[in-house]
Length: 332
Image (cartoon, rainbow, N blue to C red; front, side, top):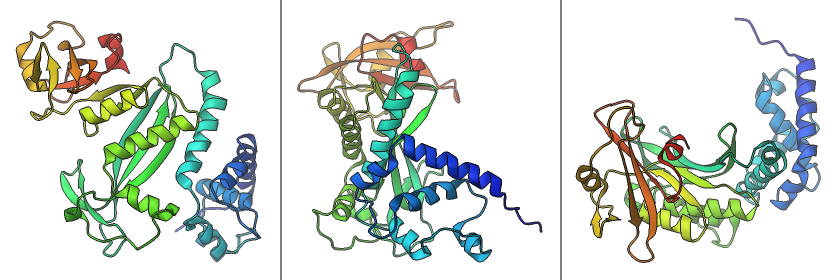
């Protein structure tokens, strides 16, 4: 079995590149704004090593085992930095992405290009865990089974060509029936307490909170994109009325979700069955104007398209920007 050779020249290039990145985007100032400062060891040295470690061919353990670890801080200092409950990493990633987007990406993007927020969640699998704090039963949509772990809700920004992660949070079960392990007692005013409270909230409410934080840091976009899991009328109304953003999202084929159509309250299946479909080479099957919400309803457009994986099936997309064409809604 051959070992991976240590390339000192490559490591020096990575370290120089990371140092220039941290200097250009003032990462040190952002770290201190998020309570990530150290008293004796410069926090910039630890964070620079952490970024370089992501591109290195050896882990920290292997570097210490082979006596190639050359940093002036200890292993305990490194892990205390990562495990500090006072560091607001959620705010740090939002501030850093704001500087990258506004200072680097926006000047390279034309005004006609539609930049968007993208929201999605993924399974954070902890199948072997038993006593992990806030461990829950989470439904995996890929295997269609419940698994142990939590959900990672991620907010990103894209201009159609590049994707920048903005913020993220770990979500446990909002229902006590799916919660396997409880949370440690802590002050709800502290950062650790706020994160534990946030993990027990509904994903749709946390989604609006992440979008509001991104806007407060100066990140802007024209539309918010998400899957049918988040496309409830309450979420769409909150994004439109509170955040002043338009939504382009998939729709659940549920009989419980109603839309205002021609003076009636109908679900998406009833709307689809009552209208004549487009035939031939049309990119969509149906396009209708509806209203979302009962009180203070907002206008929206629903576009139905063919399912690429199953031509006999169809999918529905809702857009709160009624002036946007059907082709542009599908493309976005």
